[in-house]
Image (cartoon, rainbow, N blue to C red; front, side):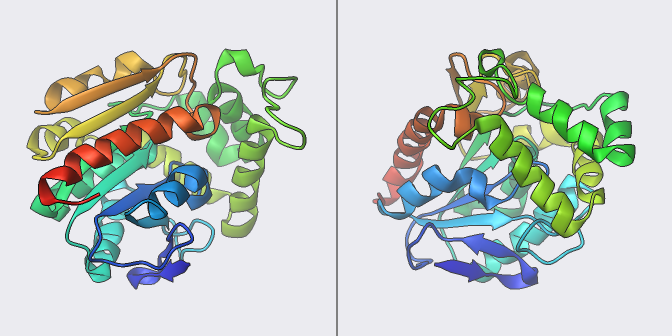
Amino acid sequence: MNLPTSQGLYAYTGGRSFDPARPTVVFIHGAEHDHSVWSLQSRYLAHHGYSVLAFDLPGHMRSAGPALASVEAMADRLHDSIEASGVQRVLVVGHSMGSLITLELAGRIGERMLGAALVSAAFPMSVSDALLVATRDDASAAMDMINVWSHSASIEAFQRKPSNPGPGFSNVWQNLRLMQRIAGRDGPEVLALDFAACSAYAGGLEAARSMACPALFVLGELDLMTPVRSARSLIDACADATVVVLEGGGHSLMSERPDEVLAALKEFAARVFAPNGDA
C-alpha cells in the first residue's frame, strides 16, 4: 500500500495497510534519493508488527515539490504529515541528510517519538566547496563522485565485483541510476539544494542535547562521506546513545550491509517500543 499524506508527500507503507494504532517506524532517505533505499528494512518491519511510513521528501520522486533548501524546512513538512497520519508512538530512522532531519523531528514530535535511528550520520555534515560547485554546475560529474565516495573501497566503484552481488544487480550503478532518475524527473537543482542544506545545517548538537528519546547510530567503518569520527560529537551530545559500526561498510549501508542494518533496527525497535507493550 502507498499512502499519499498531507502536504503532498508520498509514503510507502511496506506493502501492508497503514494502521496508526500500531507502533510506527518512519523512514527518511538522504540527498537525491527516495523511499526505495529502505526497501528491505521498511518491508520487513511492516510485515512484523509495525506500521511504516517511508517518505519521499518534498520534490523527490512521488512527493510534490518544490524541493526545500534547509533541513529545518524539510523537518517541518514531514512533521505536518506525521501529525496528519494520527500516529502516537514513533521511531524515526534517517540516512545521511535524513539523519539530520531526524534530529530536528525529535524536537517537533516530542514525547511521542520513542527513538531516533541515525544511519551514516555526521555533524557538521560539511560538503567540500568543490563538490558543492559540481552539484550546481556539473550534476553528472557530481553524481559520479558521490557514488564512488558513497561505497566502501572494497566495492571498486563502477568497475567489478563485489559491486555486483548478484546477476543483474550492481550497488553502485543502481544508486547512480536512482539519482539520475530524480534529476531527470525533479530537476538538477535538487542535488544542489540537498547537499547545500546538509552543509549549512548548524543545529545538530543542540537538537541532540535536547532529544529525550534513545538514539541508535549505525555507522560504516569505511564511510568516506560521513566517517565514524564525524559522528562523535552527536553521540556525545545524546543522553542515551547506542553505536553500531558495521565492519567494511561504506556510506550506502542499506544496500552494502542490508541485513546488518535491519538487525540493528529490529533490536532497537523492540527496545524502544517494549515499555509500551508493543512489538
